[in-house]
Length: 282
Image 1: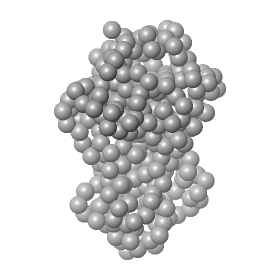
Image 2: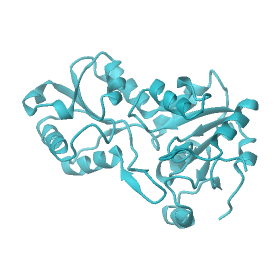
Image 3: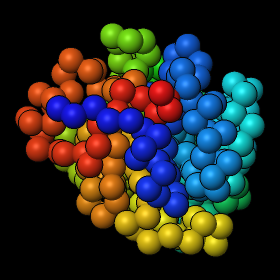
C-alpha cells in the first residue's frame, strides 16, 4: 500500500471536502498538523468544506466547536451536514404535526427550524403516538438506550409513518483503539426489527454529495475532477466519493487503523485514489 503526502495531493484540486471526526479532530482535539494544513489551503485559495454526518448540532454550533480549537477558517458556511438534508426533506414532505426524534435537544435544531412541533423520544408517551407524523434519528445521545428504544420500537409497530435517519454512521472513534456505536447502527437495528426501510441522509448516499457539490459552486466553481473527498472510513466517505465521481483520500488517523487498512481495502473492494497517514503537510 502506497502512503502518499497529502500536500502533494491537495495542490492538484480546487475544492476539498473533509470528513470531521477522525480527519480534522479526534477525542483529544485537533489532529496534529490540521491547523497548518488549513492555513496552507487558505493561502492558495483552495476551497475546503467539512462534509459531515454529524447531525448532533447546528452548523453554527459545529463551526464554533472548530473555532474553539483554533480553526477560525471553519465558519458556519463551511459546514455541510447530513442534518441539512434531513431538514430539506422535512420542509417539503412534512407541513404540520409533531416530529419525534432520537437525540439531544441541540440536534433538534434542524427540526425546529421548520416550525414543526418536536418531542424527544425521552419525553414521548405512547398514548401520544397518533400525533406523530415522522420519526427522525439524529444522535446517539440524549435518550435512554433501553427504555426509549423499546418505546420507539412499539411506536413504529403502531404507526406506519416515515422514518428519517440523519446520520448513517455505524461507529465513530473515541480513542486510538476504541469505537462507539453511532445512530446509524441503531437505525439499522430498528429497520431489521420493523421490517421496513428508512430514509437515510448523509454519506455514502449520493444526495449528500449532490447537495455538497451544488452548495460550493457559487463560492468555488469546480468540476467533479477538481474536487477531492478526504475521509477516514471506507464505507461512507470513500465509497460515497467514489460513486459520485470524486477522487478520494483515505486517512489513517481515525476509524481505519493503519495496520488493518490494506486488508480492509482488499476485503471490501472499496479503493481510495490515495492513502495518507493524515492531512498533515509533512
